[in-house]
Length: 321
Image (spheres, rainbow, N blue to C red):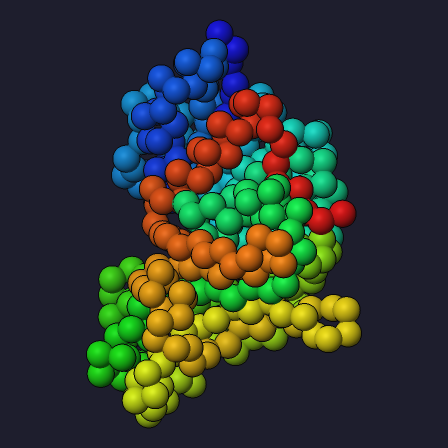
């Protein structure tokens, strides 16, 4: 039986679900001849109650990283996780993450490791709904023509509540009360979370070095009830749409903005209250991906799936060269 030693950075909702799902999937790993050993879990508050498998080592330090074969990063943020992961990545060991902000904004430092197959990040765009895997493998045989996507559940919720007659401020307050939106909610409603995800996607189909700064971003803060009503009267719905389209000059326009779509558009039907993406390829035709794009266990399912890929010997997600 081969032992794979795993370290986990962060034990919030996602981190706890990753650890519990690894425990639940131990028979699957065992059938592969693998025993997963959790070396340690880095947390900010040692006294905070957590739902973790019995015997899990919880620590405020990260000395355990030296003994890990693979690290799962569940912290979020940019500077702190990069500080912790930098020496680990330099040693040639793999990282599993769902951190779209880190991937989008620090690509200059991370790209080398991604090209070497050392970064696994299926969960970074649509959580447990697989889009990076197909885009980084089979879809490369098809000539990419463009994509549209709804990638932020908080904005989806707020716009749906506004369709039901609520003012933007009231819909936002409800989203915060339910835990869907952060306080402050700028990353979500300002469109920046969606822009991070679009940047990650663009590197698999448009340009392997696509910069986050190239995404033009408009959030939903300015959407009014009058605009929602006008769209409905025309048989349309307002969605925060991420779009990657040819600019006519051999490059790509990347935008995130509220957009009116026909009510029967795939992003309004398959994507109702969920994340969704419509991918256009010359040879593949139109493909629709839809499913859960947030949530602790949904995200954990993709991260543990990445761990299974690593154990099987598959490389991480390699962008366009």
